[in-house]
Amino acid sequence: MASSYEKYQKRRLISSYFSVILSIFLVLFLLGTLSLFVINSKKISDNFRENIPMTIFFDKKTNKADLDKFGANLAKQEYIKEAKFVSKEDAAKEHQETLGEDFVEYLGFNPLQDSYDIHLKGEYVVNDSIDTILKELNTNTAISDIKYDKQLVDLVNENVDKITKWSLIIAAFMTVISMLLINSSLRLLIFSSRFTIKTMQMVGATKRFIRRPFIIHSIKLGVISSILAIIAITALTFYADSKLPDLNINPKEDYMPLVLVSVGIIILSIIITSISTFFATQRFLNLKSDELY
Image (cartoon, rainbow, N blue to C red; front, top):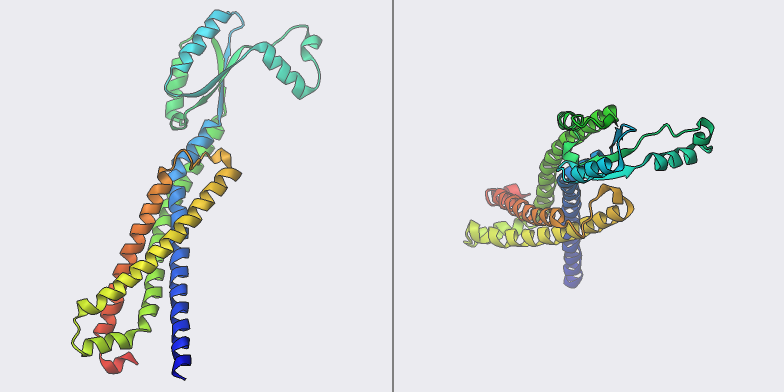
């Protein structure tokens, strides 16, 4: 009979450990995923900005030497992510493929102009920087016009600011929620040992001596949960990179965000579990024996 009871108690304890590990894992996974998004938000937003093209058109009198010189000078500019020369002949071919007919033959001449399609680096795709760049480019008399989608730039910047703001708010909210959930899970686990705590206290054990094994045990559960969360976040990151390469997360080359989040998760799990266990055991240590029921 005693053996069956011991087995029951063991199964109950294992079930409690599993519940605590699972709850801490889920909280750390969600918090870690959100933190990784916040850290990578600049890279993701820059990627969207860098996909907005700007086209520089040249006067038809501009010769090839001047175009090559302009291209070489353009490549040296710190704000340039990518620059590609598009001759009027190549532009005509692209239009012919799009329209499905040879408009050059119909008109008798090619009305298009030589141009450079450029993509600015993400940090320069803001109105102030673009205005400065346009003023600098327009000093070149060979340039006849510069086109870019100003409304798209405004829309992207506005949405990026909103997403960044709300991501930080949600991250702060999730941090508070995670602390409360982990604290509740550990308090339930320690609640099952409240009689053991009081018995140890009654035979003369100090509060510090009683708390220490509970804190160490909770930290171990937290570390196990954090390792599982790191594995899940790493797998999710590589999966997202394979399915959405345009986000430019690339954890194989830029692994520091993943490292920072992993270290943060482990430290957070240790801090929260130790603090929560300290206060949970302290609560039962301060209770009178008849209050344990």
